[in-house]
Length: 295
Image 1 (spheres, helix red, strand yellow):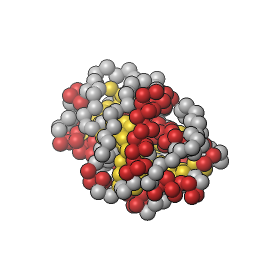
Image 2: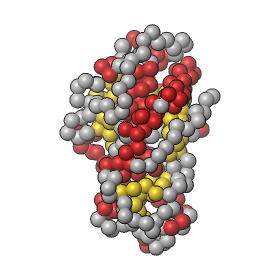
Image 3: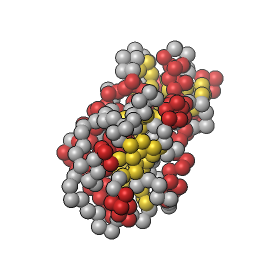
Image 4: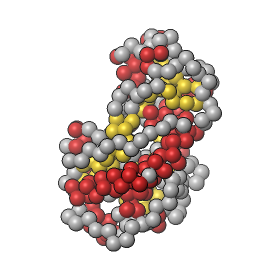
């Protein structure tokens, strides 16, 4: 699904705090393994890397409203989550440590424009790779493959897949791909479809026994489950495919190849798993690094 449908209301207060933060000031805290900046890095032919060198910093496009993925704490202003840690990993392997990172919150609808204008060096924020977007930007990855899934209460044993939703109240966001898929596939009766403006509202309804299940990308659901693992769980096989990539300048093949090398090494040496286990993995749902789509 397109994650621009994700609840803007998850962290409205935090989004108002800041759109760009520097590590070391209120703006970031590590939620994964410590990344040490590599020395002597070169990326020959990369305009993006040249811009980083000129300013002496990395500007990373991130999200701030997705628990477990890209999240900014409303009180401290600090960033955490799987996507945040992947962004930090890439920066470290390019030679930039925690004190050289800037975080720019980029709404879903503005990602291509922001990349094209050179306002960020790369974007890590539940950014699904697809052919339409490739007309304007380039993608390294995927570093994670999401898919529509189901969030239920921890003690629920009746709902195990999309085929067990008949007679159940299903909640998602109005106008979103997941709720449209529920309707199109007639996964439950029309009167049992519940829609809100944000996923956090759906989760509140689930916890209060007003609905039976929340549906959207499993990555988002894992974030909610990780916050309250004793009360929530993600169940069933995914029933769509959403490969998350790292977006960057369309013409910078050198940087795309370099980031792919970084992701490949992280998958091989266990770093990817460490990052996952420290973030989305807290939901109790296992995952493995996906194969890269080099081009």
